[in-house]
Picture 1 (spheres, rainbow, N blue to C red):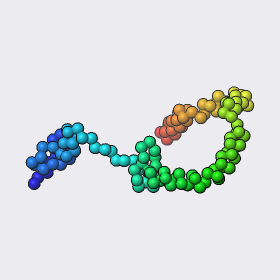
Picture 2: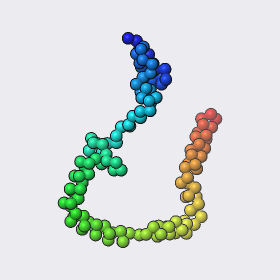
Picture 3: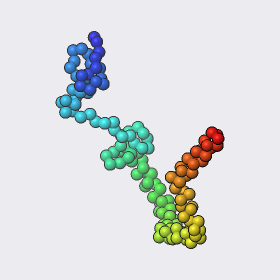
Length: 137
């Protein structure tokens, strides 16, 4: 029995008496193969539930664990809420940039340009060209 490439996909091998490989036959019949199921992000063993990233077993364990630690979580959430109130708002972060411009004055523009990737590349190319010229001359 001699194996030859499938004439349709030219990937799979078939025996001399077959016309097409199994994959091509399924595609021609309209049968769609299911892709591999996504595995649970916690146990990496079981397929996930639709719309979730965990399997049924891990989800049940998480819910059981939530019931036991609910009292401890209430205290933690109160503490976190207090921390959030004390944090600076994002609008205050926008004030940093003008303050830097005032403090640095004319140097602000040079700092801004020094941080650009293009200027760093240009400087490296110039240095490399200068080294090559020194080696030649």
